[in-house]
Length: 108
Image (tube, rainbow, N blue to C red):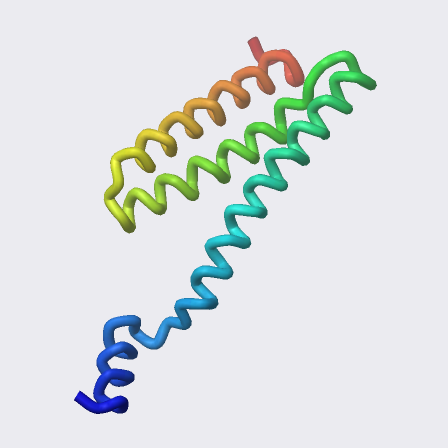
């Protein structure tokens, strides 16, 4: 097999995806999710200090995003731990939504 055949076969296997770009996107996604978790914690603590109650809305968004990421990864890769994490994060999202309805809006 010569160099051109190897390159052609590699392109077919990777469907013209840039593996370096995919890895960079993966790392950026992980860092963005970590930073968003820290920002949610900071906002929630500041809200608790200055308004005497935590801000539940930021946690609804955060856990909604985490749940979506894990469930999409499960659909694509079929790994059980990602399904489990997606369901756990979804449960946290629902819990914080109930807290938001109760404490912020006084629904029940």
